[in-house]
Image (tube, rainbow, N blue to C red; front, side, top):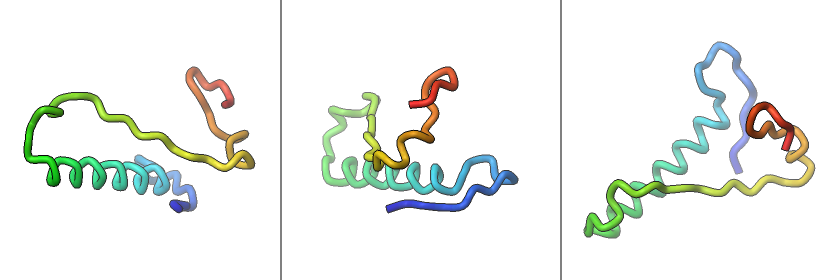
Length: 66
């Protein structure tokens, strides 16, 4: 579970920074365990599981509330 307080002075919110670090770590582990470069350069996506009580405050494309 990742949570953090908002800090307006930072360029990226701490919670998002944590998620990006986790995503990078997963990608790095995948590359380390798989020495073949067959997937090199292909897009990688992650899915985020959010509690229904928190989903009302998410902002989607073009500022729409998700």
